[in-house]
Length: 482
Image 1 (cartoon, one colour):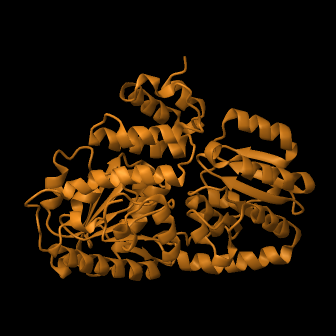
Image 2 (cartoon, helix red, strand yellow):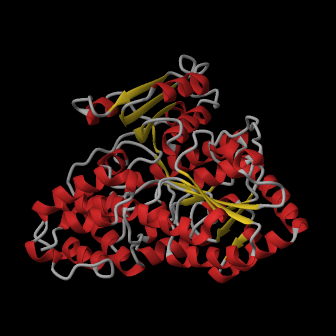
């Protein structure tokens, strides 16, 4: 008889099997014995949503199940449809909303000057500069430190800072560490984190890639203004005074409402045209001849850490059709691939397919590419940034993180139009050049650190104003039910 472990590991991504196995072990004891009877990818998400909504679990156990499920959608698949998302997010919001359903909750007073001068930044796991959330966390702190009024930046992280990331910290923050009072605190070893954070006094709280279900997000809203970075097109489940990303507000309004976010969250979203991505260094070009290609080849690159999930049937079928009618095209895939996909691509595409499991200097590799073809996925922003940094054209649908990195007129609404556009880029060098120049202009804006510093300061001020406004109203009344 199939077990939960058998089911989850059968399609786990090669570089995430250990994490998926850990979830499977936990679920073996949590879920009912008959959960796996008749289980398949078509009913998996719906069945788990049923358990999350009405199963015999404590709130803590429900939060764990949701956290595990969201991880699995990245590490294994399948995706969560809108109906199940509304059910799951509704349950999560109700749990975190109850945190504020208590008498005599603190009503702290935070001076505007303190909110600008002092900051606590929760950044999730720190690992290595090749881990985009880790690099982004340091870049975010660097932009905070650009404000001459800042006197304290406390960075709360989990995990272990690698020597490579420490070198990046020294490079990006070295001159600001003492001047701006930047300090790092590992939450894994702090015994009483809440007392530690609150004991340092009033400040603005920031959340950069902090897990959506982290208890600190809701708790910190009790003690000061909050600013949260949101990505992957997913709706938040905890309150913040300001949520921000690069999508236009109308896109977020429609998306978050469809996925189940409360209106009180949606109205707190703020658009920023720039971010903390520091990609201004020159890229060393590589030679195509080193890979057996010449200038007549048209190289299409797809990059990711979860390609077994990202490369769905529609994307692969569309690329296959293009490769068959364009023998000069090469599909370069960078990242771990499940063996069955690797063998299928090698057998089906022959010399038109090239696989590179990993390249530490991705921007350099992208210099031999013509088009970065982003799959139909919510993520992929870091690799698209690398391609843009190398001056290459990025092709993407009008949803997900990558869509925000190209001009609006380059965001493709329909999957069939996606491949039609790719054919036009292959056949028309002038159109490719036009796209590349327009995308480079857009890219310069998104990586403008001075521009993002102004946006961030504006968001900090707005979060403070909203924090002051809500002092007269309990948060449980602000957060509408879903």
